[in-house]
Image (cartoon, rainbow, N blue to C red; front, side):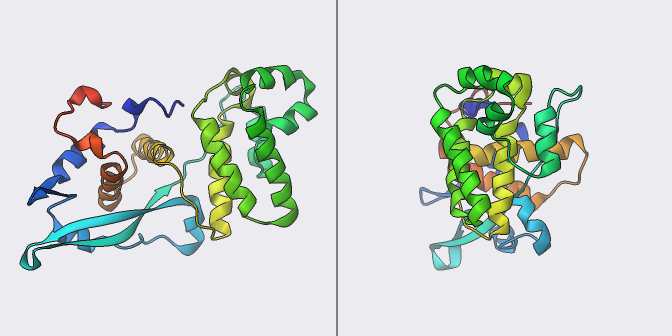
Length: 255
């Protein structure tokens, strides 16, 4: 998955939602003119506490205009993005991923090279510019398992985001599978279990939203209007240039 390809960030429905919600008051941008709808949004959705570890939480600044008071009001509410697990490919291609899922552990290419020497050259060739990152994640994981200190997880998840920008590689296509996304979700859940605050890059969050929406569509799950509005607000804030009237439909991925 190439996060650098910005055309993959917006779906057709998300683009329409942003265009529909945009308005201006006295030359200032207001995310939506439906103040009652914004006020009705809950600070956090009704998700059981035990289930919240399976979501990524992102704070959203809510901005709306109060005509009677001639002022703008601001609130912080939270977008919760359901984490969608990576599914191993059929045919035994993702044996390493399957084993990691079964053991509830990350996929550590450094340890894989030690355990399976046949993969050593392929991994080194695929990640020759990122071996220090892989070694950092591997060492962090070892220290986390020994200390249970979530700070090691934070360091690892940010290193993992960097790796994501250059996936897929030959090694991930041939035998590692979508290990970077798998590791990212594993780190998010662990940080949630520790109730540790952290923040991912906008492009990473956009990808999590896109994967979640694809899962919803493929499984015909009921729509969530609040999530759709929250995600539109996120896109408006994270990628404000995408709402510019100067951009045409060709600047977006239209399904």
